[in-house]
Length: 374
Image 1: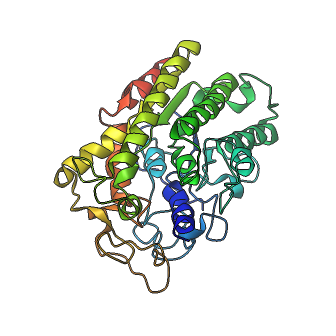
Image 2: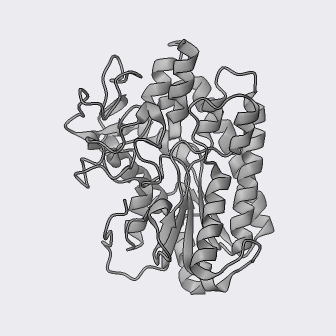
C-alpha cells in the first residue's frame, strides 16, 4: 500500500486563456509563443478531473487566488513562468491547446500536467500505468502538427512551412522528464534507462521542431526536484544535501540536465541558423535556495497550501480540499502545494532567465538576434 501511495503521489512531481497580459510599450520582436512541458507550464490543458489525481483540485480555490482571483487550471496560486515570458514580450497569456478553435494569433500552450518525455506505450508495456497521464512530449508534438495543419495548411512532413510564420515565433520548452522517473519509482527499471529513453524522445521532439522551422528556442532543464515538500516527506532524513534537500533526487535531476545540455549543444551544430538557449533551472533554483532573502523569500521548504508537519504537506490532505487553507503571503514561499511553485517563485525564476545570466546564450542575445534578423 505504501508503494502505491508513493507511486501515485510522486508522478505529480510535475504534473483558461486569460485576456490581456501586455505590460510593455515596446513592440515585441515575436508575434507568438508556442509552449510545451508539464504542470509547471500547463495553463489549462488539464482540469481537476483530467490531471494527476493526487492534485485533483486545480479547478478549485485557492488555486489562482493571488493574481486571477479564481482558478484557471494552473497548478499555482497565480501566474506561471510562461505567463511572465508572455508579459515580457507584450503578448497575451497563452491559451491552452484544448481551448483553441482555429488560428490563435499570439500562440498556443501545448504543455500537459503529468506529461512525460518517454512515450506512454513504454509505461503500458512495463505495467506502470497506475494513474498515469497518457500524454507525452510526443503527444504535444502531434498536437502542434495538427494545429499547424488546421490553421495554416502545413502538412506533417512539411519543413519550413512559411504560412505558419514560425520565424516570428518563440518556442518555449518547459521542463519535462521528472514524471518519467516518478512513474518508475519502485520498479526494476534503472535511472540510466529512463534518462536514455527520455533524452532520445526529447531529441526527436526538438529535432522535429527545428526541422519544421523553429529558429528561436528556449529549453529549460529540470529544477532541484529534491527540494519539493513531496520529496522531502518521502525520502529518508539521512538523504540530504548541503542545503537540506533530498540529495539523491537532486543528483538525478542534475545528471539528467547534463544530458539535456549535451543534446542542446549537438542540436546547435545541426541547426546553426537557430538560436537555442538553455535555461539552467537547476542552478537558478539553487541560487534562490542558498540566498532566499535576497529574492524576497522567507520560507524555502514548507508548502504555502497544505497540511501536516514538518513541511505543511500530507498526501491525504492536499491543496484545494475543502478543509485545506493557504498561507497569507504566498509570494514569500517557494512552494505552493508541495509539488508546484508559487507565483512569487516563478516570477523570481523568470527574471533570472529573462533578465539575468541563467540562460545560455542569454535571453537578451536571443532577442537581439531576432531584432537584427527581422
